[in-house]
Length: 96
Image 1 (spheres, one colour):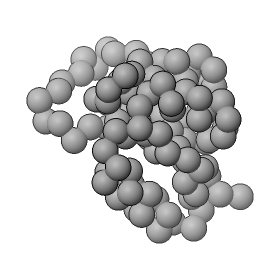
Image 2: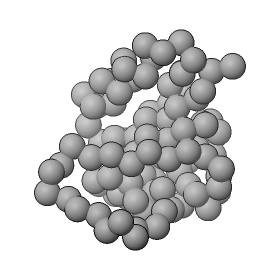
Image 3: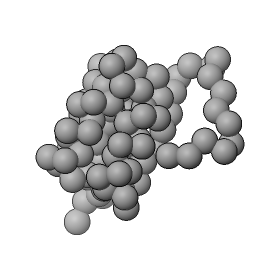
């Protein structure tokens, strides 16, 4: 059974690159995409992915806020936060 992955990033090019990379592994399947955290929460409710890959900086709702909300509705889901921005530094004590 494939691991279902939801990709969340406001940049369609990054989403496509992630999709292409993920689907090179036959054990992984991209079950959906979202362009911001608010849509990601809805997609998690609809699609029940095993893993959510979240961009940290997005309009409408950022990845950290979305991760907290997702954790509330799907506490066992795996969440991976990432960013392409080099100026952002998170505290090691930030909790999702």
